[in-house]
Length: 91
Image (cartoon, rainbow, N blue to C red; front, side, top):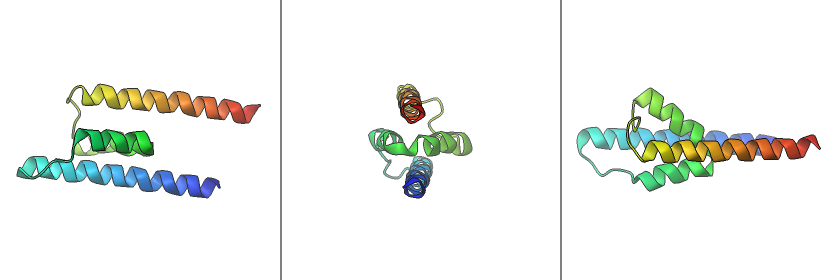
């Protein structure tokens, strides 16, 4: 089961990074942008690491608010969820 979980997380994070890259390209060239809602949904679905990596590597959406605050909230909620899951496995 764990290999499938890891593979799924790698896939969603790669897809999230790719969407950020596409959005950055579209922003530079005046093309159709990817809605922030879609980018945040990808983070909620497990792509938060890819979102943060894309922000840092691509320098995209680093100062945009409330996007940044929403992404931080998602990451915090996922961290709490991970702690709760890991605590459950410790019992």
